[in-house]
Image (cartoon, rainbow, N blue to C red; front, side, top):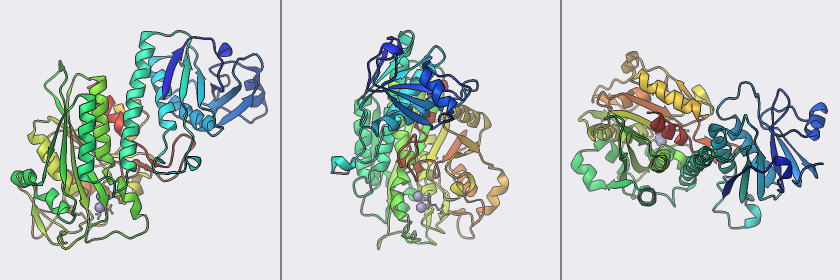
Length: 484
Ligand code: BES
Ligand code: MN
Ligand code: ZN
């Protein structure tokens, strides 16, 4: 999509649709008498997700005006305009309009907000329907967006570009998650990572099963053994030209390309959604792509252990005991608790690669969805300073992380009579005991675990987004590196 900045006054710009953001307090990013009329009628209050389309607006060159609710002007929070821009795009394209202009005023034509609008346009236009063959049944896409600002500056141009890089990367994560298990297995995911690395200028290494055996990744290999698809372990490296410190951030993402549950098989209902079980890995690959482009001054390496959790005559059994890379033995109580097994070895490996700080993202537990529904990412930390950095990065990007407890009292739930640890901690506090399990493999590094099981997939379409993959937490990862 073409996204441009123009300093033509909004009333003079010829476009099929001119989008005007309207505030709850009254007024909007462009003054027009019709805005006052629809407000007086009560049809438009400025609340998020509201939109109204008017034809042949008097005194403007545009063919239509779209008033889109942008929320409260006084307490403008990060994300408000991103969502409003996404609502606008989804609204106008349903009318078969492919070109859209946005009226921005002095308050909204800032670098931060221009990035948000550019992102909102690209994220709102995303649809996971690329495998539909009948174009008539696919959603229309917008072709160009023009942001009308009081003054075009270099800073605003850079803001549009940053927004484009972040949103396109986030959409890449969504595309990867959207790929079904038959089309995207660990080998294919690694091929995508290689292509991203070549295009973005990252170093890429992929460990194969033999290498994992040599290293002793018994936890990961135990999960992988049930599938005919071999596992891969993807590593993407970003080295800044001049790093601000010796810190080395490791981003680790769960890459289960399909989760049947294994011998502890899942119920059939809803199992198709388990293609999204590599959403953490997709987010890491996509964030590395963006990081290579925005070039933060911190060293970052991405790690994606990729496996298919399947059933076969070779699949691991409940009761099996495996030895993880760090030497700890784990008793498999439930083969469906596979994410923590592959992450255990990945976290140890990342620490041994010299990462000073670790952050992982994983669709790890159904329990986190019970706790936080689909709104907040569950965050668990061994280091408060690192957690605060992540929470701030997320907040700045309109993504939300809620801190969950990780006290040592939870260790008691992880007792095995036969091995150092069981791979599940019982019925209660499932998201927490899963996180506590991971902590045992972080080699004492400051670490934050993000459970994105509730937030990586949207079960319904919303005014601002399609049903399906959300691309969370790509922007948080990039902002974390930028803020480092
Ligand atoms: N990928 C799932 C987590 C999941 C389950 C996400 C359902 C969304 C919906 C993970 O591998 C898993 O199966 N977790 C189990 C762990 C349990 C066996 C301790 C879960 O949460 O049910
Ligand atoms: Mn599972
Ligand atoms: Zn899983």
